[in-house]
Length: 304
Image (cartoon, rainbow, N blue to C red; front, top):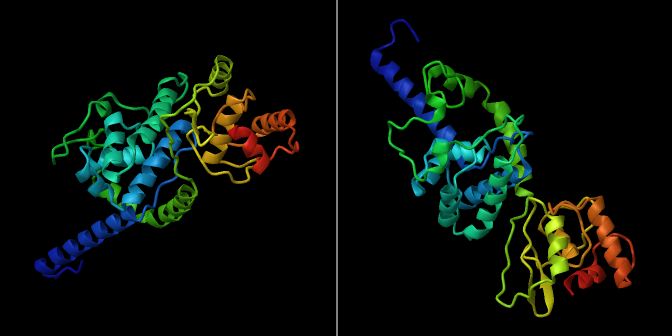
């Protein structure tokens, strides 16, 4: 600032700089530039956070707008969407409702994440859900203070002081590059869909025992029959599925393998060696070519 610069000009310059900063923050937030999730985040919690991010990107809104549409503040949504805090059940229901998504599917992911978080070992020091986060809607008024703003000495992500703002602006180029890569990875994850049918056929007791043993804390299987085809509630499509594949089609294959008594191991949506072994067992028992690949013949055996 020049020594003799008029006071009015100084005020105008600071006001313009503030507007530019806020506009840049809103633009970055609305474009879905996500921070990479922590490496130590539990897989069920990671899947929940990825799904919540998909819902926000689907609505194409900022966290400020999302806070206005729900009963949870912007700072809370930032913690939920970055995996630092497990959102309460009511928050998951709220974002499902405003995005027009069936809450049952998202709540299933939340239940697995909550189970994984509550059964962690004592040595895990990762983010944990706070008791205050599970008590429903929170006060979003100007006087509301989140856990990041407990004192003037706090220089963390929640600090509102000038030092925190300057550090954030200096690191923005590197952060943008990292979150763009994370956003591309998020877009590669397919949305999970749950299929239900009133004409469900109950599996036998032996099949129920096999299924229970095959999916500890993994994805749930909802067996139904539609037009004579067995469905497990994750995908009705039948693409070629091979080793190292991933996604809802793999979950469907794993559930159907467990139904037919061929354990794929943990039902986690990843086509690994145990799943390939179970596919070969099914192919051998059904008289199909034993190659470990799920093609039309193998899908027909799985759907019977």
